[in-house]
Length: 491
Image (cartoon, rainbow, N blue to C red):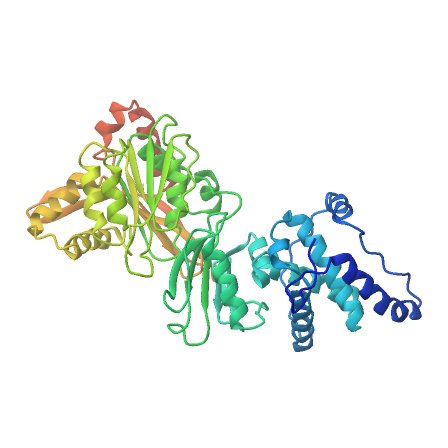
């Protein structure tokens, strides 16, 4: 199937390599009183052994590894690469390929007579399989659902975020070249590249996790890889209520806002949960609506059947072929959308999104980086100016007021918790000033003995929001009144 390459480029079958390994290692192995080693005789046997169900392994943080472990791993990995034909390996089923690699690594360990415990040998086998077939040392971290972010600062330093706090992990890479190879493996899956000519790249993992890579010469100490992980179990508004991110009445209000097709902008800082909240709100879109999403790296995971997903494209080596977010949003208008959802608004495309919201595509949504609803409005003005539009300030603000109905502010607090801090309605203009009114706020009362902030979501006492007529149109005014009353009681 695959085997050792000689200078002639021919491939020796793996059975011949195993026979040599067996002849070399068996005398030494049996001299220690152990039973003779047994290797599968063919790939069919490997397939039979691969289908046996294994009990799920408990996910645990990786332990610290010694320098001698990494030295041994480097020697075994080099011997493995000299032995196998990667082009043949890539044609095998992943489970079969993993079993085949484990068998050959066992042969190499026996031949080189490394002194290792059974646990160390099993860990080495898993590490090398991950290096060849997966994402190397990142695999144990990607398997943990309690990690929100993975930050790799060169081969020697890897940090993770757990429960809102950043801590150093024991994970490291063999060298910067191994890290760069893994980065290239990740970005190539979505048709991107990362090298000296294109050292910055945004990509995604198959589960939707967001990936950013910046490589030398821009990163001075080796490639820097940042992964914003997506949980395997997608969060819902009910789960956000249990986590304290929003009150039950506030969650009911958000459901109504999504249901009655208000135009929504979700505002917040980095890591505040904007995309998670956007995913939650899309669950309340009717299943018969045509939805078009525009993103830099596709990470929204809508459950409706009629969804069209669009993704931007960077320029090629000649600097041509770039498709920007603004190109996508403009093209959306020709695709008969009922709702347009922009993953993240960063620049002049905000003008096209506002135009779409104002021309019949009610219920459109987007996210924007800002620290408060008022700052969100100012940022939209600034981004429109960045696009070179020479509109008067008042005209820009009138466009914003006519387009945006609700601003939802998400925040990551200093104790690492994430909260929805404002549900704010855009009311209109007085003179040249945009008028807003808060429907709900998050009020911080203090902190407990463990440093966790204590607070509650409170109603501002607003009994009849501006979108009341819209709620009546969708026969939701009674439910809206009950949600507002419940908010006042909970306050």
